[in-house]
Length: 344
Ligand code: TYM
Image (tube, rainbow, N blue to C red; front, side, top):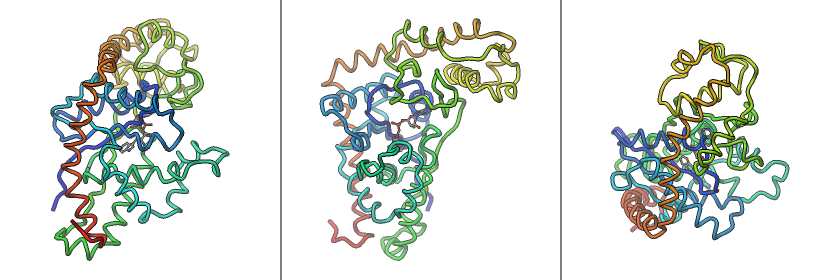
């Protein structure tokens, strides 16, 4: 039996949503809704793996939901919801804690980066984070997961967990009536010119929420002047833009800005270079500012409006959680039966 195609992805409500989150993930969520059933989740259980001030967390949850809607995801057609409102995420994550191996998680580069030198001080949740992520996806038996490049290793782990669960419980799964394994092996959708948007200050560092300098990223809430200032100050090199893609090799800052332009304009990098090859940054940067403002201003305007309407956001999230539970509950009951728990 083929698994039904279903898209799932999540964004952490940890503040400072930036252009990397938009181009690497949220914009692609919008594109995928045309011909897929999608669940887009504000992953607050992931956020608390590092300390979050409670009132700020609440605000950030609403802000991510607002960003989804402002970017163009239709909450009537698709499911926008908040992870902690669907208890199956935590429940399946526990089962996956018992399926995944310590050695697998020890290899996760993001844990090493986030825990840094203070590994002993990191929360247990931060270590087990990828198991929860696998649970997010597999609770809906989702088949496709649009993410930025930095989530690739976590997606591979989710596939390993699905595979091990299918193997460990193969007899029980067959008895429950599933001939080809219970969980699909979810496929990462990592594509396009902006799967890894880099810092504006350093072309070899990822644009991130947590970077100390706000000048390193364009936030989805930045106004036109701020965007202009950040792009103008963005690090570049002295050369003109090349006319061919190969000419960007060894020029990380130029490659980054051209990639951002291509993603915002919905064209290939080669197309951008056809237009701007031979031009210097004095010409390219103002064009990039104009495009970025044109694309981002409506989103930030709508985000601001929606954030002011907390009741409306909460209504959408509550309704989304109801619909998510409708999909998750029967799957979770099968999981309980497969594992051998006394079922419902
Ligand atoms: P998070 O909240 O860090 O980021 C949300 C999405 O934005 C992408 N992203 C980027 N893409 C391109 N360039 C960048 N500089 C950049 N920075 C971030 C991320 O790849 C991500 O797609 N673990 C996930 C959240 C999560 C999830 C899931 C995702 C939890 N459960 C299940 C998919 C499926 C995370 O921390 O994303």
